[in-house]
Length: 396
Image 1 (cartoon, helix red, strand yellow):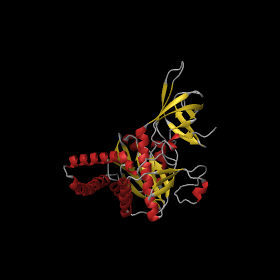
Image 2 (image 1 turned 30 degrees about the vertical axis):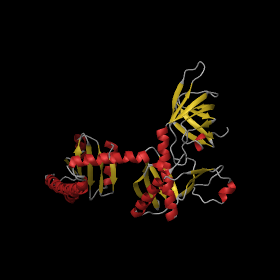
Image 3 (image 1 turned 180 degrees about the vertical axis):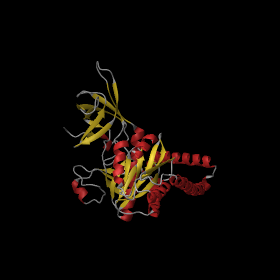
Image 4 (image 1 turned 90 degrees about the vertical axis):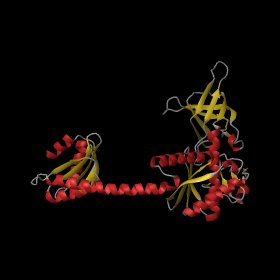
């Protein structure tokens, strides 16, 4: 099979095209789904860390009714692009393709923004972009070196200056001889025709994906998240309209929190910190009260019994552990507390100074499908069972 002609290489702003169906294959593992190969396409396939284009294929001629089907996936295999649809076409059919432009343009904004960011990181710090992922909701870049928060802020500012400068991108297909003398970024060894995307003074990178014509079309870039990753750093960004949508959502969340807390935006942080402190103090006071109640109930247990159990409402695990430790001093067998209720289930802690608690853990798993684990002297976990059955089990 000859390689598919990739129209998106030279015409990234085109949204419609005509093509001939070369082959159709039913997917055995998925009913009513077919792989369609065309002689040419505008659909960018999933590759280079980027999700595929979305859109539709239409066909209709002669006695056949018109068919318009959504393209559900696009993949590339050895240069042949495969479109996955739910309608069966026939080899020789002439189809009309239409790209979901909003989705395509958003991906173009994200990908060009990533090039600007990665180019600045490379020229400033010498780090390589060793991982890139562009999905419907997030764009991540993995760099093989650490960036401080101040570094990231400075890079973000420089990226947005490049966007404001509205530089013209250059797309080229240099010969192998020309490539030998060029300096460009690439995450892998390349074979065949190489496509070079240049942002003058900012970045030169081998890339197969559609990009905007000018940096101004990126619209803006916002760093959303930074985390240490495999000895380097993973940075999440959003550009253009996706960044705007994210800002709108954050603004909505802040507005709702301001309303709930009757607070101004300036006072929101201190208000939340104060609530956290109050919650911690209340949690501590509650734990103290729970320990006193459990301790009183533990005193009422049969002093001669080896295996003992207490049931309580939802209870702090630290309070449960503290009382189990006290119970173990007075009883030679298994000492347990189950906290919760029949409807929501129970959290449990079991301790013993003479018996292997792991055996009780196994028994609870076999009898009640409990979850959890621990060591010889103490186990903890959760179980969904009726109190009456748990109590009967303990008395058995």
